[in-house]
Length: 588
Image (cartoon, rainbow, N blue to C red; front, side, top):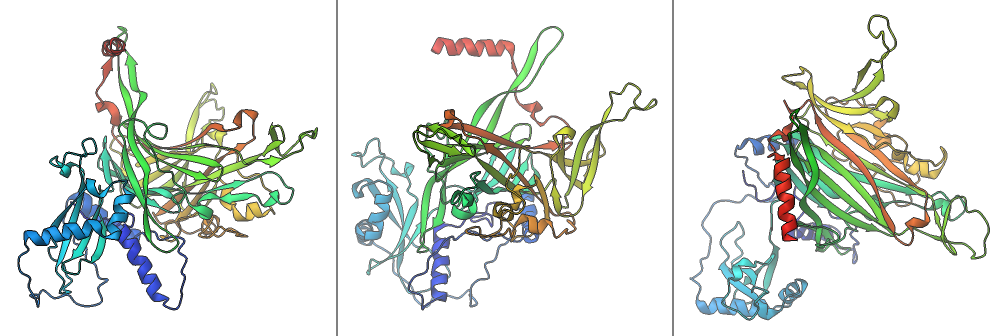
């Protein structure tokens, strides 16, 4: 089923513009309204479940916009218009290309008027009868390789905006920004929707593998960066980078080369400025595939080996938050695994120290004469809203433990088993490396045909040191999500951000810890929050610019499929590999 605009799609420029106009109209006495964010208010999950089921089943789903304040009747228009002439079209082209707003759009794209083609079309019809004769102008550019060739196929170079012009007055009534691609993507059995907003940056919706639902929504919720130096004013030094500034607001425009390599699909982001005007951040997300070494391999007794190379699909975004760069990657492999990876780089925040100082700076490290870099932590919180084989999911804590010695059941003392605990209420939980603790997201209503257990996905946490600030500190009060590795809450569409909605100069947490402490019955609709991080003790090797530090979380199917989902990846034998290597060497 094809839908022009999906409920999970980010707001378009036109929608952002309309939203800001409505806000301004609601406060007519305010000469200055400062907009901080205009983002999609996501639909209620209960409403979306039936929508997504119909969408993926191929049924027709009617979506009705009930925001009109009057009944629109199917009646003949009061007026009619004569056919247009070639002279009309020529006038539209001339006035359109010379209009200041269109000149600005052409400059935005780095083009010249001479290189742009305006093609007027009859406006068609909609539900607005304003008595105006209008033209919809579709815009193109000549082949940039041969700009002097005006007879080339400019339809191969469409532009991303389309003006609406009124005949005779030659006013630009609207500039529409065209949908360049669906936000729904599929590759190697994967299918998902890509979103982008000011605070979280990249958001994934409706993630499916091989036609089966796995996750309703995935995003990095926020991050907390507290510093170690207790001397004023450094005792206040801390940041919630997403809540204070925004991963989307600080997203880089990615470029081919260092940022992304290979055959790339870029996504733009659309945000609002302080005046409520929509603007485009170009290439804030890149998508590409890359080789990932071996997916599976086996050597049989005869010595013959067979295996398959692995390819992963990568969605990547990057934000510059003051001195740090953070690279956020979602990876999707051919065996159904989802990886979330953070790579931190950039330049450390520094403080002065006397050049002749012999003092041992115990809150960090001297990284250059006269320069110290204080120790600090980066603690992230990932929000996982599951839909494992549908809804009605439960979370199960899974520990692998040694069996006690027993003459009958474990006489040699080598046995170990898996202990599972169902987590049916909201609360906070911790990792336990000694028990190999993982968490399963199960669907009790779906039985695996082989194991006869509930189908599941597994969360492999990133085990790390958590918040070091003291119990009575403001760091602890504000960044309470940094204390435990896992929180469970009952789904609520308003609860998206781990530290709460507002973090600037906050004095207490009003986020996931408060929600988890309600101890709600999860009733088959849990949201999983995984906190993890890194404690950065600076080295001289981290200065003047840091090599990346890497953190990884893994989600993978667990008794979800009947067999290895990557078994159908075309195998490659040793003979094939030798032939390939020889071919490469010949080309070199």
